[in-house]
Length: 116
Image (cartoon, rainbow, N blue to C red):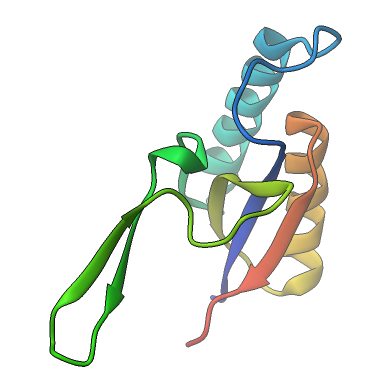
């Protein structure tokens, strides 16, 4: 069965969420949706990520060594805030779950298939 990556697109860099965001409700909604995915047998793995400024990037060098830099690889207004991996029949099913994840997180979700 194909697997899909549902990427949570997080706005901005760090800092607290806007005051109108009910983070406790979002957490409850995401936990409930993860539980439903597990019951339905589509959930493979999920996780939230720390802010991009906690990242370390390794770049291979011509001499076989690696350049190690702190911070994200790419600068941008948005970053990957978390993800869910699901195993479903097809893209339509993945998009249906992606809509549910977007509703629970209140954030954009990118849906991408894994190569097999």
